[in-house]
Length: 440
Ligand SMILES: Cc1ncc(COP(=O)(O)O)c(C=O)c1O
Ligand SMILES: N[C@@H](CCCC[NH3+])C(=O)O
Image 1 (cartoon, protein in one colour):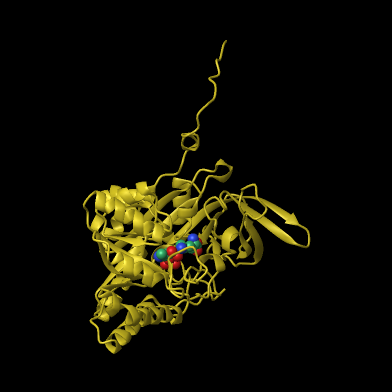
Image 2 (image 1 turned 135 degrees about the vertical axis):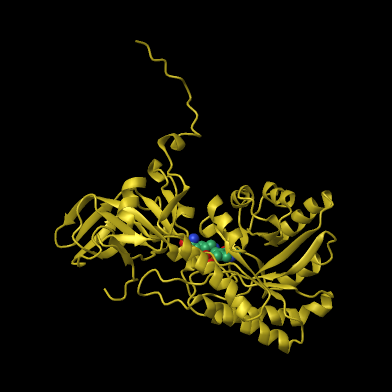
């Protein structure tokens, strides 16, 4: 299969990641196991940052931590000099526990609760991305009660539909996110926000969707924002200093996916802003972006152990593994397609076709529909590639499954960054309704 990704294979014919034999990792740490190539994450971060430097555009690259959030990844992002996008109290709390610099945290969400807003205010985070009129009022009320000045961006819904799965497209008019541009809500919100004394309105934010393979959608959203600013900046006596164009840069999960290189997305965004702002005769704003998937997506591989097989004569052969939709919901949710290999048989021919099924009690719990693999037997190690984004972060305890362990590997060294859940973890919030007295 020439179109497959190239993988490192060691002398034992085993898949290697970060200088580690994945079959040995599976034996030592158990499965399902998520293995992140730490160096690859760092390289993705640097590519984004360097691309802006090459274009000489002042920028903030904020890692969209919803893609994968834990203390270790927040620490890594700080080391790489990135900012952080959070969308909930839980993500914010994790970042703060990791001692991520709060002034580089941006807080998103279409229904941040009062408690979450207070957590952000207490931490003096860098910026709130205000999503709607309710939040515009509420956040200002809370800020004024504390006599605290806050930076905000207004999230707009620019009316640009990214060509992606319906559920991960967010910039269209009919969206739960942001102030609608076409109907005048953005102007109304901006007029209000710029009058409110505890707000420092930095600029606008638009995110058009996820897993995007072209740059036209970003250019269109930027054009729409520039046009809007032409019509409203002077009227409101306000000037935008930050333009946040969100994330959504695509990655290659399988041979159907044809993403651009990271720097091509960044160059296209910078070129468009530079062109329009020079036409507008205005100083360049800071450009902020929020990549999630394109930083971590292709840097992790999930290892599973092969168990039962079932042949449906003349139809298919099921190969079952010890995880499934509890550690990777994306297939059931978006019909996502993944590639896989047998980590212990990397040099064997892929002569067999299997339907890789999870172990959850759900017919739709299939991870790969037609996986081309060597003949698989029990205890083989199945490696599913590109599971780094929205894998662990959407993992769940359906069927009271334990969420997997997560490792960072680098230079022949493995580090646990999230421990495997235990059965004790599974019942830790359960409250018994009576105590059973055991008599002998
Ligand atoms: C507001 C916002 N920013 C950033 C992202 C990150 O997107 P991606 O992981 O596709 O880069 C998302 C998710 O789609 C989002 O909703
Ligand atoms: N969770 C989604 C994308 C949503 C991104 C957040 N707006 C995925 O796995 O592709």
